[in-house]
Image 1 (cartoon, one colour):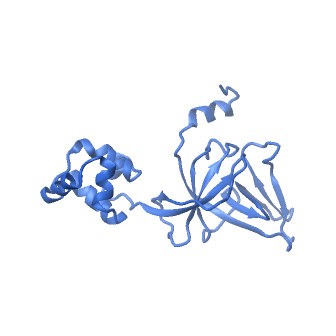
Image 2 (cartoon, helix red, strand yellow; image 1 turned 180 degrees about the horizontal axis):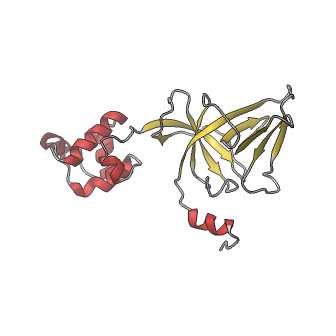
Length: 212
């Protein structure tokens, strides 16, 4: 049994992956993949593709102590500066954290007003059971508004503020009185961000006023 077959078998078991699904991704026939299984050996040249399939890097793939990848349902897009259509999305996002996954969900960022921490297109993993404190990033809904901002609670002023990194005409700080019983506000803590669109260089330049 070679090392790549060993780690691939572990990932396939964790993710309930079917042989044919991985074979199709690797662009090999079911017969070829079956031969690998019989010999308990996968050519090392496929290591990067297998890591890509499991949304991992090679070091994590080969790390026996690496946390298993869990699947979290993607439910909608969410406003991070641009209008987001919150229709149901199909598919799953990967999550390797410690939170229990029963209630976790994922929303896809639209806009860059939470840049550089959250970029347009990033997967945002949210946990309805996680405790929230000032400074946390949260996904909130109120009326027909759904967005991601920073949670700031001021007990002395009796207000809650939801603050973006960058203010715009349509994406501003939202202030809510803590004693307002009529507001239909739901706030959920963001527990992970999957950086799918790497724009960090552009975001850093924007922060120091050198945007291209």
